[in-house]
Length: 342
Image (cartoon, rainbow, N blue to C red):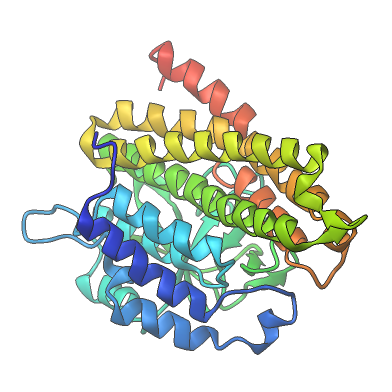
């Protein structure tokens, strides 16, 4: 694994950051004012929605590392765009051998697909038991993907999906009721394809956490340099310094394990990649809660107000902690992997 990003990867991150800045959220009121469709079109025009589509020999156009960089840039700005859901959907459809037109519709922003998770949020929903399934990254989605019979992906019509209030204000959720139409897609997934897709999903959940918290830390450090209390900047207070130092250690470690997991998605064999991804999520999940709460505390009183962005960062990180399984789920799964049961 390279310890540094390539020049091309840094350029990709810069492009993603420019798009993210155009829909950056700094207060709940921004969620009403922002033009989300314009941002979505910009992602498509930059080719970012098609990062996990395949070339002629079946190789993804972009690596897990590159998708991770885009996800971090968008989450750092609290961008209310369903990027992760769209990329995971396109990747899953490609692995299942879905019609190329479906995938092209996603990558060119003509259609939005979402991911359906079981009510516990720790796995793909069962297409045969959709009642209570949760649709993540549901904004504008017309179809969702679940796991059908015989290891086949199922495409679900979301016409009957009900809007659901969630902890994360920036990414709408939906709740499914029984009776939604399910259409089998392509061929049954191989063990390798399902394992690699799960690795990518876990890695992007970690990337979202790292982006949210890393940018949140940068902002609170800048705030601590300019906020004057008792005649001095609050950054001169030892308590604030200690909180910021601890947040830095936690977020840097989370970034490191996420970088490795993103590289492992495509570079290692599927089981090794899944082990790396589960290890990353097992570390990042508790960091999401710990650092999210510390961000609010470091801001002082203003960090507890509705108008400030701090609670939105904490809420988004807390939701990322749960999707595809929290640390307890991952540690149990790692134990199973180590014992050769998965």
